[in-house]
Image (cartoon, rainbow, N blue to C red; front, side, top):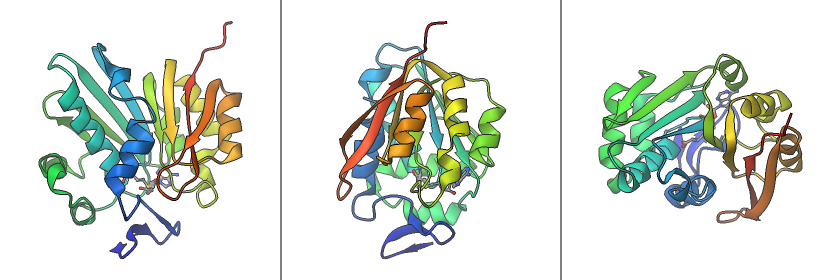
Length: 219
Ligand SMILES: C[S@@+](CC[C@H](N)C(=O)[O-])C[C@H]1O[C@@H](n2cnc3c(N)ncnc32)[C@H](O)[C@@H]1O
């Protein structure tokens, strides 16, 4: 549902992104949080994994920046979990920004298909179902993580130690992580499985957020 506070979930009593500046927030928290585009410079393939596809805003901004900063022989692979997929018309209304329209149209052409080849060189796979159950089935290795599953206090399932364990199992050395929350238990949970975490200033009214990277412990 979209109202004067933007795209909102009744079930979780939370918003999908900032109603004042969704694009600014997504860029500041997630793209800057993983240090894009420097993080994928010179990489033939780069894998981003997101928890909480929602409207696809994070995906579309990542895809746009990828297309603007990489060469045709580089490939982006983007996995995103989603348990409660929005329908096409909700996404259409939510993503009304003009400069995103070509990307939104390409997404909506095939949505709710969950396996896309985007712009010829971006693979998007929406993992439909509960994040933990979906991650348990996977064997990819990720270079970056976006944790975007509503506020931890409202949706603890998306911030469990089991999820953090799966993230560590599915991370490449130095895989980066970014999230809007600065909750202490999230920081500690990620540290426990090998992420080195830092707080940085948050976007808008949020005082702090978390970023970090995964460092494989030597055996
Ligand atoms: C804050 S919104 C994500 C916003 C999104 N990244 C965007 O760009 O629009 C959180 C998303 O997590 C999804 N979600 C909540 N609990 C989930 C779970 N246990 N597993 C998978 N997805 C879940 C919600 O349906 C919602 O789409």
